[in-house]
Every structure is written in C-alpha cells, then in structure tokens.
Image 1: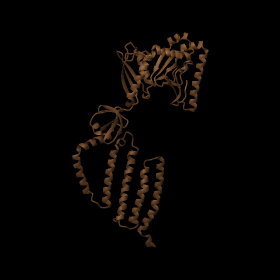
Image 2: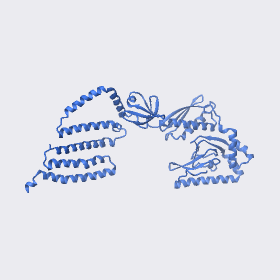
Image 3: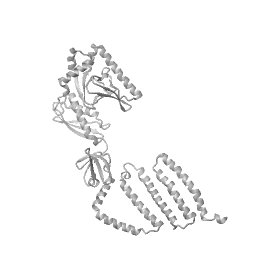
Image 4: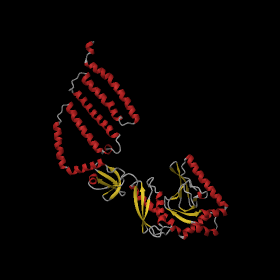
Length: 473
C-alpha cells in the first residue's frame, strides 16, 4: 500500500483532480464579474478558462500522470496546441492592456489598425518558430536567414511601390485627418468618408474622389475641421452707399441669429469697409456646412433687406410691394378686420406687405410683437419649445394671423416659421387698436384667439402630444 501511494502519478492525479476544478470555478466567477461590467478582459479570461487550462491539464495528464516520455508524438501534439493557445492568450491580453482603454489623444489610439495587425503577425511567426524549435526540435535559423535575404531582394525590386505604402502608413500613424473631417487637397474640397492603408476617400458633393495616401503624404493639404471649434465662413456684401451702415450691420447680424448651422454660443460679426461694402463672418458648426449655410443666409438676407427698405447689391425693388399684390392683400385682411371700403385708405397708409423666405422666423418666442401679421399667401408653421425640444403646435393658413400677444403687451410664447415663401400684411398695433375701439366684435374675436393659443401651449406643456396635424391660429 505504501508503494502504491508513493508513485508520482498518484500525486499528479491528485493535483489535477483537485486543482483544475478549483481553478475553473475561480475563473468562471471572475468571467461573470467581467461580463457584468462589460470589461474587455472577459475575452482573454474566457480563452484561459475554456481552452488553455483544459489543454494544459491534458498535457500534464499525458506527460506526468501517465509517465509517458515528453518526446512522445501525442505529447508533442498536445504541447503544440497548448503553445498556440498561449500565443493567442498573450496577444489578446496585450490588446486589452494596450488599446482597450487608450486615451483619445495617445499614440495607442492613433496607431493604424494595419500596424497592429502586422505586429500581431510578426509575434505569431516568432512564437510559432520558438514553439516548433522547443517542442519538435526544428532548426529555424536557416529559414530565418533565407527569409531575410528574400526580403532584401524584394525590397530592392519593389522599393517605389513599398515606399508609397510606407508613406501612407506613416500618414495613418500621424492621423492629420479623421473620418468626417473636411479636406482641401488637389484643388477639390470634400468630407473624408473612408480611410484605409492605401487611400483616402473624399466626398466632394459631385462624387467620391480617391487620394492615395502616398500622394497626400508628399503634398500639402488643408484640414478645414481643425482646430476644433466654430468654423467662420467669410462673406463680402454690397449695399447702396445711401443705406445707413448701422442699419445694415443690424440687419446682417439679425439674419444670422436663426441659421440652423450656427455654432452654439457663437455670434456672427459684421463690419463696414466703406463704399457700401460690408464683411460678414458666420460662425458655423463645421466647414462642411459652409455652402448650404451661406446659400440660406443670402436667401434670407434678400428678403430681409427688402422688408427694411435696404438696397442689397444696390437693388431695393420689392416685388411684394407692387400695387396689384398690395391691393389684394389689403382686401383679404379687410374681411378679417371687419373694415369697410371707407377705411381701406387708412389701412393702406399704415400697413406694410412683407415677404419671408422658407425657414425664416416671422415671429420669435420671447419677443413682444408690435403688429399683427396676416398671412396673404403661403403658410406659417407654429412651434413651441418644451423642455429644450422644439415641437409642432399649429399651422397658420391664408387669412389667419400671428402676433396676437401685441394686444396684451406680453412676449410671444410660440415661434412662427415660414413654411416656404410667405407673404404677410403687417398691421401696426395703433391701427389695430383704432379698429377695435370702433368694432367691439373684433376685440372679442382677437381675445378668443389669444385664449385658444394659450390653451394649446398649456396642453402641450402638460401632456406633450404630437400636434403636427393641428391647424388654425
């Protein structure tokens, strides 16, 4: 009995029978904790538990517990499999340690994936060479020397092509641009949509332009998205020399306030350069928005200048003020205001016809209106801000009006936006009060309209329904 207990295989059997289950249970608990936390280390721990430990136990059982010689074929096969698994485990652990939690500005985050793949391949080749030399006794020295000579010959033969690839890889490592940045290179401008080890793909708006990384590395280009922050788009504009500069500058700044691509907490700047010339700087979120933002700004400015009587590009003619269109607008509004023919001259002398471009703000929330605006053509979209989110409230059609809060001298609770090109007739508050004193029914109708609008805003603030289908003032 003593001889039996003294055998080495019994010791190894006891170690394997007791130690392996304990290690597997411990690794299982560690793995569960890592999975719950969503930690990247769960992958190498799973590899260690499911493969490395069982194969290592099998090798110990084959070599030690069964007293088999270590150079037996089956032992070498198991040792080779274990070696592969250990290499994979080390690579996985290295990936977690170096790249998983890398800071956004560190060299690890900027390292191109192809560099990582090449490094992994070299480590696998070295590990396999060491493994075969250790387990199978293979002579890898001659193979390494042959590969070295071959690499030198191929490098000399392909030095131009390889040089371009290396230049591209170095460009990727430096990362002077990223996907989403706007580049100006080779006489074109566009947004980077794809970057690989060979080329950068740039969307120019008229197709995808492919720039080899080697050509970018060997020439100058501009990254319009850096440094981070607002991108200022310059504009040079001309007005008539008779237009007061302070009025023109106020118009230029007010028109830029509601641009949808304006950078948050940034304001436009405008200066007078003399001889009717003005310089404007629009702060935008990014350079990709320059073309559409400047186009919309110039469109809004065309209508806003004519509403103010200012001559943009030395032209102050306003088609909306033509007598025929003005007369139609007056007669449409006269019905709502209960105005007779004898009062049309007074209404015509004090009311003004205004035209707004699509998307322009006709009446902003928080502003006390000084006139009532009747929709003559087009449609207004009424929105309200609820907890920082803009929601649809109603639509104002032809013959309806906005700006009722002028009667109570209170700030407007809603914003009126032009849904397409909209023409309105603006009636000053003084004129409106005169008509209301003469016609008590008009005051009652306007008061009911104010109460309906307040009820709509209150219901939206409480229940937050979707009022995109609602109509009327």
